[in-house]
Length: 262
Image (cartoon, rainbow, N blue to C red; front, side, top):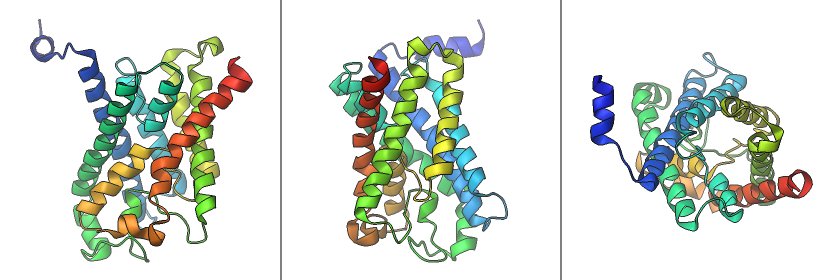
């Protein structure tokens, strides 16, 4: 018996709920770390070490790795919208839905800390140590989404509801057993779906995930960017990527069931 196997036997968590919560926390952290570091490299290099396509690919492949990591433990929801639509379908208990969502947000918060540590010197070189949410030297967008100035409240709601609905329609399609998509290919396909959403509907950051946006937003609030992370656009934005993906996820999942699942 090797050292790793001994470690597993000694510290293995037998409670399924605890294992799944740990999995959702860690794997959501993997997703957010992989995505925010991609965004950081693009922004802090002023586009010399990356492009918008690179950012989309970075987030997509981060999702691929994160889903693979926990697929056989919790199913790798990594997104409160996914957990919520599974609850509405009776595939997840209400308690698990709430707890999964909480640890997903915590995972996003903690992952943002490691991105901040990794790029701390680059951040200071870029903004002189003054953390900004808006302006030419703004860096809050590395962590959370901030829309174009022209976006209205209605446009923002549509952006998040439609984007998340599309994501969850595709997730349902990929995971539908009747489509016979091999399980080992499903995370890869889901990752490419996120890349595609970023390419066609990424103008406003395509949060499409409460944990991916709220977790990092809470971190930037604590790490020097201040209350502007929530008061941006006179408080007309932060709640949109927080709550609207939940609506979009449920709508998308049930749209799939109505048109293709019956």
